Length: 139
Image (tube, rainbow, N blue to C red; front, side, top):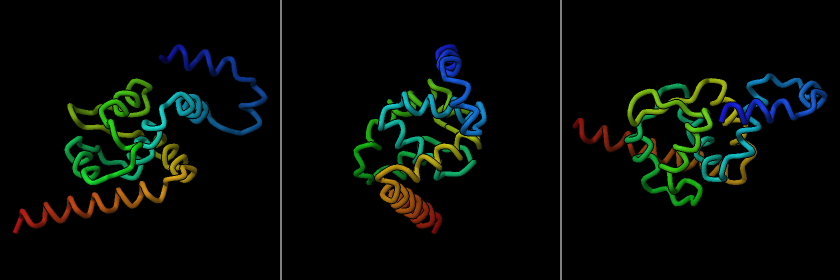
């Protein structure tokens, strides 16, 4: 996988990379982005909303529980695709983290998605519902 990315970078014209003033990391991200399925792209953008803290699979499932967005279905496949392409780290079993640079790249791509506002609303609703459940269980 890394060899493929390096070969793709070598194949890109130097003037193309130089004229955009992008770092190698951003160029690698863009190459990986182009090869992601739409579902993995949406999930990566969605995960960028969580910030820098590790994301447990349990929390992700709770937040996505009532989501009706088709691109947020088949989460297992999308998580596997993102980790296979080194865009998402598995920090512990069922716990994921985005490197700060990857989170920023996904966040920027989120603003370009057609359903960006819907993804933000799903995140806000899901986090609110999860916090309400946790709060009620404390009482």
